[in-house]
Amino acid sequence: MRITKNMPLLFIFKSIVSLYILIIFLSHTVIALETMDTDEITPGMKGYGRTVFSGNQIETFDVEILGVLKNWESRTDMILVKMTGGPLEKTGIIAGMSGSPVYIDNKLIGAVSHGWSFAKDAIAGVTPINAMMDVLKIDSQIRENTFRTSNKTWSTSLNTQDLDVVVRLKSHGLIHENELLKNSNSQQPFTLNLVPIQTPLIISGFDYRSLNRISPLLNKLGRFSLQSNRGSDGLPADLHDFQPGSSIAVEIIRGDLSASAIGTVTYRDGNDILAFGHPIIQIGNTDLPMATAQVHTVLASQSGSVKMASPGEIIGRITQDRRSAIAGRIGEYTQMIPCQTEIQGSLNVKYNFEIVHDKILTPILLQMAVESALLATEKSIGEKSVKLKLDIGIAGRKEHVKIENGYFDSGPSWFPIYNIVQPVAMLMNNEFQTTKIESFKLVADVSETINIASIENIRVGKRWVSPGEEVHLSIRLRPYTKDYVSIPVKVKIPDDVAPGSNIKVVVCDAINSKMLEMTSAPGRFSTSSFEQLINRLENVESNNNIIVRIHLNKKGLTYMGEDFPSLPNSFLSIMSMSNQSGATPLRSEIVKHIQTEWLINGKQTIDLYVDNKS
Image (tube, rainbow, N blue to C red; front, side, top):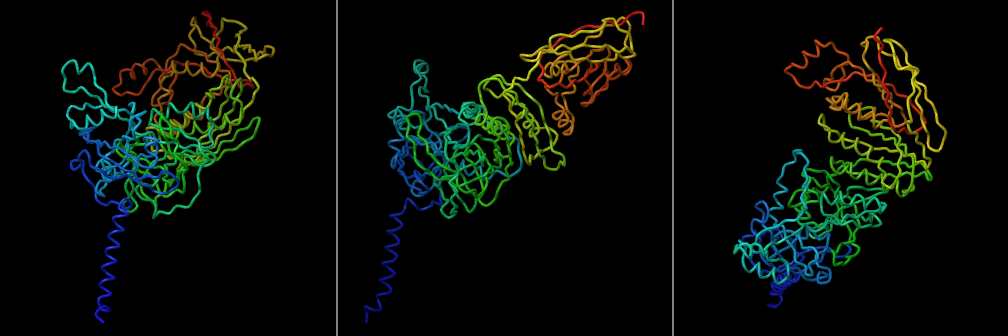
């Protein structure tokens, strides 16, 4: 009977013991809610980290503290650790581990974020969690987008560090003695170089030649390792399993073309997350899609091992891209820009994709996507003619911005794409209003026909003219591999032209015409409103036009982007003495546009003289 009464107590006791043993056994899987400051960390401490080496399964690896570099950069410390376990002995630091949380005594100390290139051991820099938590404190006010233009390499003197740190790093061959300082008996003989771990940029659908050309530009913004993949795995997300150590993807393009930056989650508090331990490009306030990710395998390499992964389901958005971390929120979603690129040529192909809305990233990604579509569809070597039609939808504006022009490309560079990217960058970075792009639609009509014509010369009926007289010009063109063609043009001499003066007639292509306009009317290129900017972009000179510019000896001015030609000298004097800026000189001229079937190039000039007798 007594045994029966003690059974519940014995059962409770056994349950408590079993639970305690289970907690100890699974200590590496417990999510640490407490954090540890760098002042509490000393060399020799041991702990563990969490990351994904394959699939979605979070695994642990062992960590030993080598030391703490105080005031490493801008009042931020850097924790140095040696990592072992899993594939790390074979791979060293793995691109994609950025953000992997590190724990000491089950307290979160920070995220794996930095390393040494070509280091044989998995020695890493850990961004302290306190520095990362500061990113969550940044308010959501819109700030000016900025990014670093440094080479992403930090150097520090080790004279103020614990000598034990120097010994440990020296044993791994990670520091070197500065002979110049050593010979001068300086107390700073050692130099240490650390770089943020490369961020795998997982891409699919892109032509490799486009990636090769865009890589230098991307690496000026951040440290990326471009990897090809099949695209999204499309698996549903289990947000309960999305914890510190999980792989995370930041999508910047998705659809027929896709690109995602891969890293690791460091910290989660409800729906708020921190990841990476370093920036993507340190753009500040941002709005990027956040998704889960699945790791397929780890590719070991002496030049830098990398996780091969695919983005999964979008679960939220990244709102901050700062020096110490990226931060985001689960359950909030961003709107990407729908894009359609239609290639008409040897093959008629349409590409549908979405890109992020960002002042810096959007123009780069649009160039990357369009160039890749052209390279994958049309020939890249040899002459080709290209007609580009770009339609841009802008929020709050009923009419779409429409830009159209033709180009001749003689090489593999696809330089005409710049003429599409430049207007997009100007609209998104304009000084007049915040611009939200709602859609892009591009039609590229590619022909292998060499459809160009050169301006050979100008002929006039007579060179001595009278005010008000109509002058007949004959412009001689030479189309490629064809006979000469003469284009007749009538030009009326102004009634008020001064007798005895001379008139310069210039016949040229669109590029030369723009250069002349920048000299004669520089104020036209200083727009004073958003609509004026759009008008300039939509009314760019067609490359199919012959432009006749007749320079007159009259003066005017451009004020706030508007032309006021042929002003009286008295008014010009008043404006030149005005206390208000904004007026620029304007040289009066007559401009005629003659549309042709060819892409025009060249420039010819002839002088006419006004008869004194008139």
